[in-house]
Amino acid sequence: MRKAFIDSFIDSLKETFGLVANLPEKCFSFISLSKTGYRVWAPPCTPNCPEGTACPYELILSFKLEEDVFVVALPKNIDRDLKLTPALLIKFLLTVLEILYIPEQKSDNLLITEALQFLANQFNIEFFLFDNKGQLILSQTHSPIQLSTFTLWEKLSQTGEPEGFIKTRWGNFYYRIFTKDGITTGSIVWKTEPAKLEENKFLFHDDSFFTIPGKNPRFLEIKDLVRQIAVTDSTVLLQGESGTGKELFARYIHYLSPRKNHPFIAINCAAIPDNLLESELFGYEDGSFTGARRGGKPGKFELANGGTIFLDEIGDMPLQLQAKLLRVLENRQVERIGATVSRPIDVRIIAATNKNLKELIDAKLFREDLFFRLNVFPVFIPPLRERRDDILLLLDFYLKNICLEQDKPFKIFSPEAIEILQNYDWPGNIRELKNVVTYAVSICKGDIITLHYLPKYLQNGLSSTKSQFGEVKTTHPIIQVDQLKDQLEILLAKYGNSTQSKKLIAQELGISLATLYRWLRKYHLR
Ligand SMILES: Nc1ncnc2c1ncn2[C@@H]1O[C@H](COP(=O)(O)OP(=O)(O)OP(=O)(O)O)[C@@H](O)[C@H]1O
Image 1: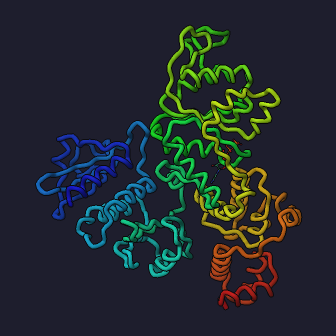
Image 2: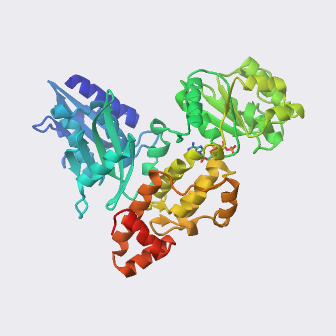
Image 3: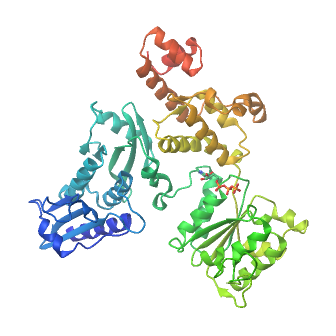
């Protein structure tokens, strides 16, 4: 058991940090084990170490397994410029905890829980580790205000998702629930310090957390299909309006494919002038044209070798290049401009377009044979207005994401703002939604994003969006009610309970005092 534990632990270290170094012999004289059999060091390990702060390691873990002593060191600057950040540590600890978290066998987790506490301390992370019944196993807090773990656990129990955010009066928390064989074994909740983008990036962008939000049944079917296609080597043609997520899906496919550790190269065929597109795609040989770089230059196809090339806006590719692309697809070889020989390539092709390729074929602007070559796996991504049930989810996703990026406390939308956003047409799809949330978060100083903080064109468009999409729904079950109640609680905490305070709250919410009293009665807040 212990051996398996250590093996998984080291595997997790490697997986998270990419590299785990073997410590030089000379270091061992400075490293001792504690009575408990392990120790975590932030070098220098002792004041006597001649290396001192010049030590090339960020962190050293030493531990004894039966008679063997293991020392694992994380180098400070490996080639990809690893920085030991709180986010990276949490990711690592989550990986380890998920593999090993067995509440009944706490002794086996001693190392990791100690390490967790040590690291939390080093990096100022506040966290709480619960067992499956909500009992606190381990915690680390710095807040002068004592956080009620009961409240935290209660909120956690209501979430229903394996990971996500909890907003409390004491700050914002991120949580992760652990399960083993489908049974909840425990959970960890940690406070998202006023997050720095770089440090928390992994939560949203790192490969191992790669996710495409969306719960609409049609969208889920597409995600399923894409997951199946991803593991094959087939060419994929992604179709959908601008901003629907074609590039995101292309990256998703690449990440899920066996090519994931090789390059993903994207090129937008519409953004590059026709005369440059050819050399960008296929490269050129030395001296093949005036101004050509000495020694020649590889094209995107060569750069993507072993990986995936994403040809965005393929409908805009000039006809003469379409012929050349067709040859690449058929022969799996590229010929640089000016070359006499072809080079073999091993590249998966994903193409995307927001145009109707059939119409372009009819207009003789797109080659039919190329279309058939590309259209091996067609994927249609629906516009946002056809999956309205995802609007709230995406708003929520971006709201949290952008608050973290901008280092701001979490905010919520007022019911009126949600009403407008929910009923808007979103011609620019998710890109537009993301921009609207970014705009609102940037200018809103309070906790609640009211109508006032939406771009003017949305504020003015209320009546037209109403008539365009029929009756505006006035309730959005669960989320809206929860949000409204939370929002009222926050404002009461902020302004107090007096009549004067309520006037201020009503003003901030843009509602009448009578409406505010009605809402307070409804949620038993007065
Ligand atoms: N399902 C989704 N969930 C969250 N964000 C998404 C989703 N789909 C797209 N996005 C975001 O929306 C923006 C636009 O996505 P993307 O660039 O992939 O769209 P596109 O269809 O390729 O657009 P275009 O045709 O204009 O190139 C990106 O910031 C992307 O991260």
